[in-house]
Length: 223
Image (tube, rainbow, N blue to C red; front, side):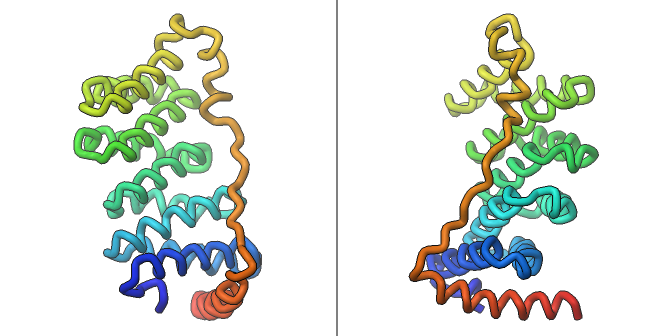
């Protein structure tokens, strides 16, 4: 299929076209999401990364409807090695931790172990996840969050160190910025508008094609 094309740019655009189809035609949204989740198990880094990014955008549109898909993606975090994809998964966990309250702290524990070896983009999302879990359940996560912040304190990347310093001051050393600290939960977990997967006119033919493709996926899923 087109998503497995040797042309990486074309494959990426194909995946985004599936995403636009899913966001435009509600009847095939679930089938498209299931197809994109299946692509996450591929070995091709481009396919995995683009699939996760598109899934992330689709889930933002209506997360409450796809709690099971979110749980499934969370369980794949150990298998996904592409940094951008791992970062997107961690963002999803932090953003929708209320729907996966039992899984989220376990993911943070695993990420704390691998923190020194992760890419910077992943480290930043680990810090974000730690902060978001802290504001909703400080009692359970306090020590783990402190540990993650301490790891970041000595990181070689100055952005990572600065991010950890900011979050520590916001959440733990609250006397340093009391005006902000009392609004920490609103700052970290503020409602975010769902992204718009724009469908330009010249892409309508592609969307129509993938509507047919999605219907095939749906029929296979039901059979």
